[in-house]
Length: 65
Image (cartoon, rainbow, N blue to C red; front, side):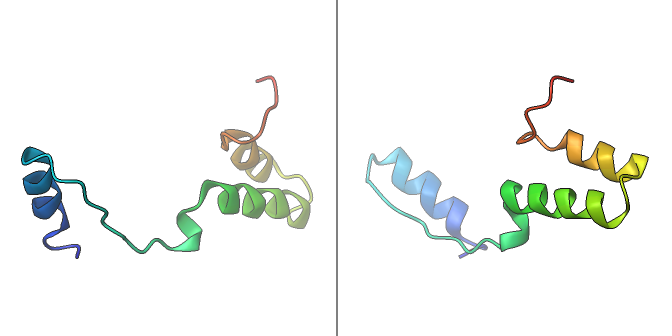
């Protein structure tokens, strides 16, 4: 699917044909999983500067920075 999915999508879109292309995604690509990992890392590393900054850089964190 990775090899020809884009070609199929372009062709079907050009002809106004509805379609659905399923693709596999790893769980590590999920932003919420990254947020959880960053949160755990803050605690594991005892609030080091790098761990806290990694946590704050995640878009899910609603800190007023």
